[in-house]
Image 1 (tube, helix red, strand yellow):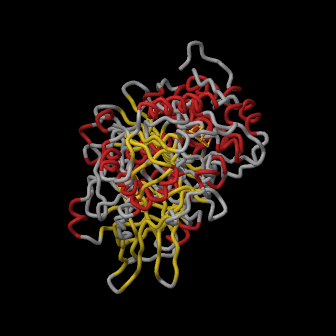
Image 2 (cartoon, chains in turn yellow, green):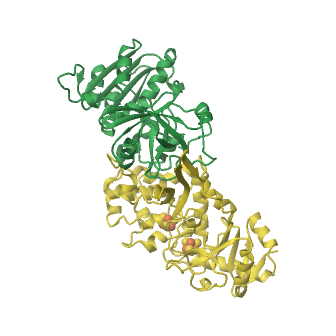
Amino acid sequence: MNKKVSKKDIAQLLKTWSQQFNVLAPSRDSGVAAMAEWDGKDTSFLDWYRNTVVPPKASFLPPMEAMFRFRKDEEGYQIEPPAKNGQKQLLFGIRPCDARAMAILDMTFEDAYKDPYYLEKRKKAVLVGLGCTNPCESCFCTSMGTSPTDPTNVDLMLIDIGDHFFIEEVTAKGKELIAKTSGLKEATKNDEAEAEKARETAYNKVSRKLDTEGIKDNLLESFDDEDFWEKVAAKCISCGICTLLCPTCYCFDINDELVKGEGTRFRSWDSCGFSLYTKMPMENPRQEKWRRVRQKVCHKYEFYPMAFDVIACTGCGRCIRLCPVNWDITQVIESVPARVKGAK
Amino acid sequence: MTVSDISQRPKFFAQDNVYLPHIVVIEKIIEETPGVRTFHFNFKDKKLAQEFRFESGQFAQYSVFGVGEAPFCISSSPTRPDHLEFAAQRVGRLTNALHRLGVGAELGFRGPYGNSFPLDFLKGKNLVFVGGGIGLAPLRSLIWNVIDNRNKYNKVDIVYGARTPIDLCFQYDLEAWDKDKTVNIVTTVDRGDDAWKGKVGLVPKVLEEAAPSAKDSVAIVCGPPIMIRFTFPVLEKLGFKPAQMLTTLEKRMKCGIGKCGRCNIGNIYVCRDGPVFSYEQIKDFVSSEY
Ligand code: SF4
Ligand code: SF4
């Protein structure tokens, strides 16, 4: 039997979960909406929250993260990995597009050489999804394999049914958590029906559509079309926002910092939008802006499908909402010449 | 194309974490040219020094602690395992710091990473090595490997060039191969000087004159991108098919393991799926990313 929770009881629910998890919830305390440590009382995000500006990848691949410390003593260099903090994160309110993005990121961090920093946090985490009721104009998730109430990539999915949230138990991890959580009410047949109605209403509210049929092959065929890419890149100012804040972008830089003989090697978000990103001392394969914009687009819609059979864009719409010059990925994808018949 | 299978590759993670470096100690430094040095080094951990394995063509990430990390191929041959070598040209912040280090200094080392030259494919073939400048570094690992297993391969031709005579790297190798009757080497410079007795001319041109036969042959090309770009058409003219031409690509890399993104071209990560590629594999992407 599915459960439900009254909206008034969300604070209580999060308090209960806080005993076992480091609960993160949408917050604007830092000035930008992001998943942040829940303060133990505030649930006002239930009113303002559409999606965070900073994607939830930040909880697993932080903007800056220490990889190890190093120090030199009489014996030579000593390397100290960071202490595992053992904390389990519970992300409350993750949107379906961003949950799908996490599944897409997993492919890269799980692939070949496993990334210990990302996977350590990811494996222990619980994702509690919150279905959208008020999609943005820039959202186009329903064209990208997910939807405002899609439970596929979360452990639990909450759906707004008026004064309650209907709780969908998705994974074993989610079921186990619910079984251990007291004070939840049984959902009725009527609640189920309300949830179904909410799913449909939300789905229909996503007005932006994108046709991605044949995009992989057509991009491959357009790879050398310099004029096309020049046009696509014309207004881009290489600020990097559409990559840094994209929930599926994972590129990072690695650097050393030395303070009074104590060294730290850390990694930090980086972007293919920056020309320094690929710069080598003698040459730079992506000196020109159009090559970098091509990389952003092709990595998502061509290379990722080639490697993992999935488009690395979930239609979250951030790059559209946040771009200072109104560059729009859906317009770009629609403008790719249909060069291949019956393309995939 | 899918993501490369790395299960068969040698792996030596420090403290079980692919990002943590091992400590290695510089044992010898050779001044190759005014800007290029070869570093001989060994693991500080004696047991690891015994167990470590790699294959010709593979690279590693080297740290100068406090400055950062950079990738260099392992330029020594796995057939001569008593120490390891890499060569670095002084061009950026990290290589400048590297060139300030002396014998006994410690570096960080992660690796080996990447694929390697396909020895099974090369077996029994005529091998044509084409190198320019410091591009001889990955080739010499393979050349010594071939010489140490000489009966497994057929004819060996080497065409190597640099800008001027003092820019020729690994002169001790060039001399050794010149004396070796089982290999045939042509050395050339773009501009000679009074003492220079060898050939003068760009590598692709000298290769065209040497005209090695494409029959049962594989060409392995390594050098500055401009040299590679002009060498492939010459090889095609000589009858080499794209699958008979191998090269190693060089890109900016940070992680070395197919995550950080910067060495991505097309659906390949140079670090994970390369650095060794056939021209066949990369011709669609490389032509327009260089
Ligand atoms: S490319 Fe844009 S719309 Fe797609 S996932 Fe990234 S930020 Fe969202
Ligand atoms: S893209 Fe879809 S799932 Fe994401 S915030 Fe918008 S409506 Fe919700």
